[in-house]
Length: 353
Image 1 (tube, rainbow, N blue to C red):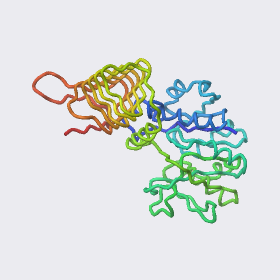
Image 2 (cartoon, rainbow, N blue to C red; image 1 turned 60 degrees about the vertical axis):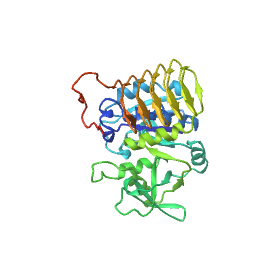
Image 3 (cartoon, rainbow, N blue to C red; image 1 turned 30 degrees about the horizontal axis):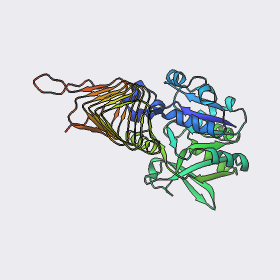
Image 4 (cartoon, helix red, strand yellow; image 1 turned 120 degrees about the vertical axis):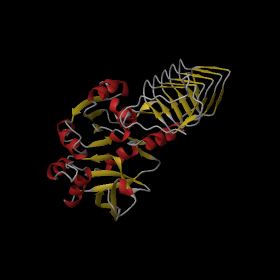
């Protein structure tokens, strides 16, 4: 059985971060989102993994390499444009080679992992197995309608949803899915929709089995979803102090990585402080991930993600619910007159009080 991870999207909802970084490499609890999917596939016994890449192909390749450090063998499949999930399946046919496979969207996170679901798919061998989760806003997802334990209808982002069961970004298929993706036509938005391909399987008598997942699932395509995923993952960590702590209070589930220094500060977990980071005369509140070699000095940060190499210095108010990119500098200038000076990228968001 093979794995297929989709990492070709442009991440327009996460700009400006994704102007310079692949959305699948934005870290959650200081680990790129993409790595969670790779690890989940390997844990389920899948070692031969294809990654569909687009404009950010080189960045993905640099981060993942040949897959050896994950215990996998990775093949890169280039997609000329983000033409839909079913298009990604179509161009992966040569890689899959007729074997059953798991398709995993590279910006999704599942708490429970995949092992039991993959084992079930192997044992029962339906033509497709789809994962579903109950959501409060089904109109924003592909939605499944069930009858007698089978999927009877799928609709992409329906105005009036028939259920609250959203398609989770993990799918399992046998070779018949290639008949489906070759038969369907692009949707109104110009993409080959995976919901149309699965509906084709249903309409042509193939067996499509639904599984409603336990635990949480996150599609991390938006800022609030990344922050929520960060919160959920941090809530599962165990305390580990490998860095230096001087004159500080470290409370609860906190990871301080090797080379990090915490001086005259308070850290209230769950939180993670990356390798070589410096926290000095600062407060790091719950659900915060501070990246490698970042600096937080004389400032307060809570429920936020600070990426590697960034610095936050002498900020009077608390920074919260924020995603701060790599090599960003936020500081209080000592000059008069007192004023704000900004250099912000396209589509940045800045809140001031």
